[in-house]
Image (cartoon, rainbow, N blue to C red; front, top):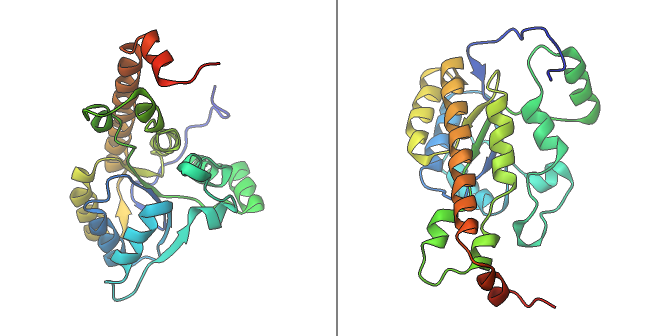
Length: 228
């Protein structure tokens, strides 16, 4: 149930100033970084783990580097060993979900120091590629089930009212082109299309996991784990 029956007033072009970045596939990410720089707006990238290294490398090539913040420094919550918890935090999800024009939500975010995120660049642990490997096991597959990534994708896609979401590196050139052409902004049509793709991606991802687990026998479970 919606918190309000009022229809939000939307802005077609949203300026991208705060970006959440957490990717397993880091190819072409530098295109987005360059485009954000070329858009001319002050931009801060909030990133996790290994993604930080890629962003710092891309940043080093820019005439005017973008601000980069480790998500764990922003949230004050260190990444859990094994990378199990990185983006699952109210400072991240509040910043993605806060809706435009909602004064109560704006005051809530201001009071708690929640940054408004305008773009999420996310892709997931490569579950399907992992389970296709000849030496893959049930436990290897289990460890490659992404939890935080789908949650961020869903939050960003739900709020296409003001948030863009990039899930496929193949789309980065188009995202970069629009950011460059529109002075660091993304249109409502683009955000809408991004949202559809993000939800479909999460659906396909969950289906692949469900199909894989359903195909495993109970004997495989017992053979994989030391059940006492």
